Length: 300
Length: 263
Image (cartoon, rainbow over all chains, first blue to last red; front, side, top):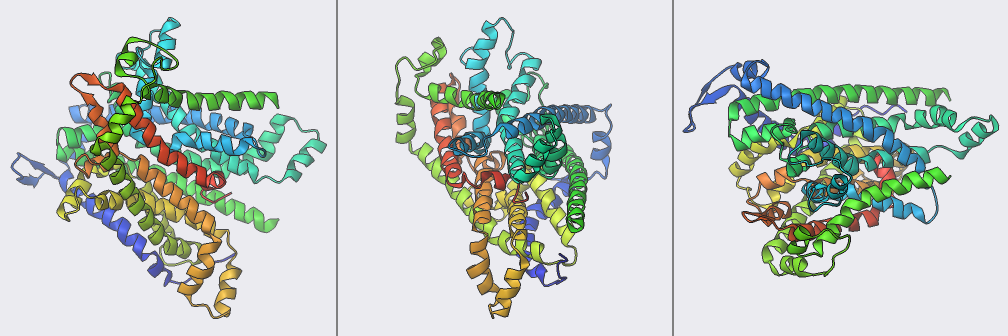
């Protein structure tokens, strides 16, 4: 299975490198440039060294406090949605029909939320969850529970978490479904002969098969929830107060709202480094899982 | 067997309820929306849709958005095809690092790039054109397309390539005539994902244009007198249609596609 070594393959990859580099490196240089300078306006910049970074990483300053707050909120958000979406997605994936007329219908309905433009996802939930005109908000309030996402921080959090679960659980479910379909029937028959319980079948046959696809799912979900912007912005705008201001929303406020270029650029870089570190971690785990699988394949 | 159906049923209802509510709202007048709570429009009206179809701004917004989505999908697939082939068939200097670097761009937050992109595309004179958005969206779509296509290509045995070369096929001819048809479903899936992520993205589309994309036009329904909920809902319903159509075409490949061809 060893691939031949051929450096001419670089030519095939060249167009991709050029187009991504144009989009990634030039803007990144701009950001780095801004992050080490300060301005008094009038487009006159002067060298500020690592000043912005020192301020950003010191939680006692205004900028630092704000950064760590939104970082914390974002980490909490990612943790909550992963804790809900992954188990729920696997459960739904297990329940999906494998053949019959229901398959196409189920797939189409499940994929639909994924194809809704992100601002429309926000709009849908904004309307659905409003306490005066939304079905969800109206019902919850008539059950005697005080729920208003524009006023209560807890309600706002519940709304954006539910929205994300609505939006993305199908991704995990579809991934699990794809993984489950690749398990040969013989495995299940063997388990039946052994008299294995449903739970044992899941733990010993299905879960190991799902490991690889779930890793892709967790990677995508973690990254996307860490850079989510549009949906919560449309629903809550980061409010009430700052209670749902996660990293992206905070950064856009700083960069495009206040036009505070230096601190926004420093924040961008730190934000990017966090993503890079997480990405590297997942990538390493993923390639190791791949290597494991290839190794077991050779043995078999 | 029973509980499986119940769980799936509840989940599907959970998915459909907010969409049903959006459709319900789109057939109501704003007065009805704000004054009463009904599960179905008491006086169904097409007024909201009429307004969208008669106002050229909305139509242009749709066309503008679909234009950059189409350009982006074509560019992404065309550049990703040879690169994915390189990754799936050869080892070359720095291949793992290159792949990782591409992946990090898929993961880079658009919020980080919004402002520099604005500078960059203004500088090259593409600001406010569909090309600016199409090229900007390449930053996450090209790596994704490479990733998906590489998965599908690795599923094609290498013996096929070798046989073709022995038969005297040149690389370009082999690639177009034999290889591309073999991974047609993979290309379909990759195109679907490029379409999807370009269609749903708002932040870059809004930053790089002067309120031309459909997503920014939707913000017009918010005015000083409040939000025109009926109109907003109708516009929302219309933006669901391209996605729904695309899903219908690729429904048989969706599951495998979401696993990036790696099951």
